[in-house]
Amino acid sequence: MDPYPESFHDECLQNGTEVLVRDIRWRSHVPAPEKTVRRALAACAEYGLEPGSVVLATDRAVRLLNGRHRGKHKPTNVLTFEPPPGYAGGDIILALETVVREARKAGRPVSHHLAHLVVHGSLHLAGYDHHHPGEAREMEMLESRLLSRMKVPNPWKTRS
Image 1 (spheres, helix red, strand yellow):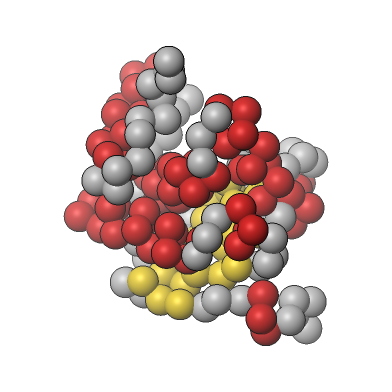
Image 2 (cartoon, helix red, strand yellow):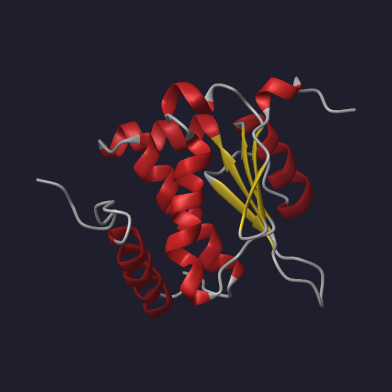
């Protein structure tokens, strides 16, 4: 049984991607968060980056998933789950409180940070990673290029 009232959901498809707002508080930090997600997905489209779903969840939900599937019993800003072999898509799940805290700390709009993390999660699902400096630089450059299409400033450039 779904613990959230129907009004908490905005289930929409963008190129086959389902966007779920699992906590209404997203709307107080990002006007029309689905639109921000759809714009980020559209920026990624030419790279064939198309998750099956993007879930705007809470720190609690992400902490539970992170503990269950990764053995890390704490929230993180974004989790990605690859689809089973032979299937396209994958899932991107974002933690509200962590996303808001990080955006405020960086002095950026929450909508810009949300867009960045959707792009970041999409790149992870496409096989990009940032465990090594070369990989991290490549991923950061691609993220900044995709975000620039949305007029979102480069998150890797220090602000003056």
